[in-house]
Length: 159
Image (cartoon, rainbow, N blue to C red; front, side, top):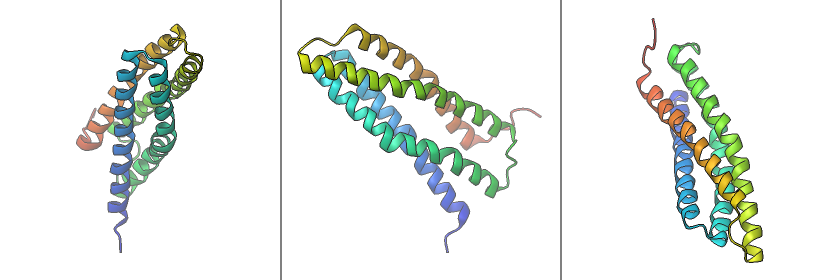
C-alpha cells in the first residue's frame, strides 16, 4: 500500500520540478532567440514556448497548490502557518506575472509568424512585448525560488 504522504510529496516535488524546469527552459529559449531577432526563428521558438506552457506549465501550476495544500494538511501543518501564508502570497505573485506572460508569448509568436510569412523583419511591437515579458519573468522567478526555500526550510517567520 502506498503511503499517502509519500505519494503527495512525490507528486508535489515532481510538479514543482516540471513547473520550474519548464519555466527556466522556455525563458532561456526565448531570451536566446530574441537576441538573434530573426522573425522565422522567433516564430518557431515562441510557438514551442506557447505549447510547452499549455502542456507542462499549466498542469504543473494547477497541481502545485493542490498537492501543496493536501501535503501540508496530511503532514499536520496548520494551513495558516506563517511560512505557508508567505508561500501563498509568493505563488499568487508568480501566477499574476505568468498570466500576462502567456498573452505576451502568444502576441510575440503571432507577430513573428506574420513577419516570417511576409519576409519582413521582426516588428518593433514584438520587441516591446518581449521587454515586458522579460521584466515580468524576474518577479515570477524570484517568487518561485523563495517558495522552494520556504518548502524546504519551513522557517518560523514570526512568533
